[in-house]
Amino acid sequence: RPISLARAREKGSFLAGSSILPGNMSSSSTKKVPTAMPTAVNFAVGGLGGVIGWAVVHPFNTVGVRMNLATATGNTTGLGFVPFFREIVQKEGAMALYNGLSAGFTRQIFYATARIGFYDLIRDQVKKYREIDIWARLGVGVVSGGMAALIACPAEVSLVRMSNDNALPLSERRNYKSVVDAARRITAEEGVTAFWRGSLPFVNRAMLVGACQVGTFDQFKETYRKMGITGDLPLVFGASMTSGLLYSVITMPFETTKNRMAFQRPDPTTGILPYRSIFQTMSSMAKAEGVLSLWNGFAPYYLRCGGHTVVMFMAIEQLKDLWGRLA
Image 1: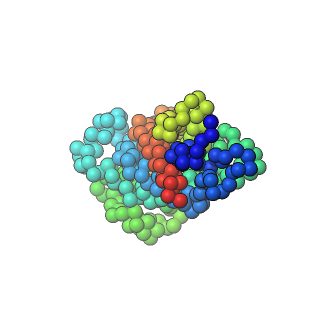
Image 2: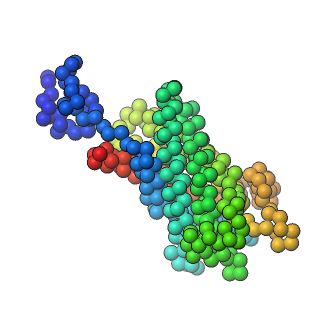
C-alpha cells in the first residue's frame, strides 16, 4: 500500500535518507538527505564526549593512581579499593578525589578529541580501499591511539602528578595549583622533555586502547546489532561495557608502567632515574613486587575505564544525534 508523504514525514528519521517514491519519481525535494558532519565538528564531539565521561569517573582515576603508586612510595598495607577510597575521604576530604580534575579535562580535550576524531577520519579513508572488518578497525584504532597519545603527553604527566601529590610526605609534595601551574613549573624546573618522560608506555598503552576500546566498540556495535539488539541505548551500553572490560585487562600493565615512569624522581645520590624503559620497568616491578603488582588498583581502573567508555560513547552518540537533528 503506498505511503503518503505526510505519513512518511511523521515517521521522522526512520525514512531519512531513503527514497520514499518508486523508480524515477524520487527527487531531492521529497526526501531528506542526512547532512554529513564536518571533520572539525566530529573532532569536537569526540573531545566533548571525553570530557563528559571524565567528569563522572575522575574520582576512580584518583583512587586508581594512588593504589597503583602506593607500593612505590612505601605503602604496603595492601588496602582494597573500598578501604582505600574510604581512607582518602576520611584523611583528606571528599574533594581530594577531584585532585587533578583540571589536568584530566585538559587531557581529554587533547586525547579524546584526537583519538575519536582521527579514528573516524582514518576509518573513512580506509573504507575507500577495502571492507571495514575487525582487523581494519583494530589497525585504525592502533594508529589513531598512538597519534593522540603523543599530543596528550603533557596533560597526562600533569594529571598523574596532581592526582597523587597528596599521598606524598609534606616535604616531597609538588603542590601544583592547577594544570597551568603544573605545566609552567615542569617546564621551568625539569625542561620540556619531562612532559614526554614515560611517553613510550603511554603511547603503547594508547595504541592498545585505540584498538581495544574504540576499534572493538565499533565492532561490538555491529556484532550486537546482528544479534538483534537495535535500541541505541542498550546497543551502545553493551558494546562499550564489553570493550571497556577487554581493554582494561590488556592495558593495565602499561598504565602501571606509565604511572611509575611519569611519577619517578632521580636518585638523590647518583641522579639516575630508576625506571628507564617499558620492559625494564615491568621487569623491575615483577621481581621486586610480584607480577600481579602490574594490575595493582585494577578495580578502580576498570571503574574508570568501563565507566568512561560507557559515558563517553553514549554522550558522543547523543551529540551526533543532536547534530543530525539541528544540521
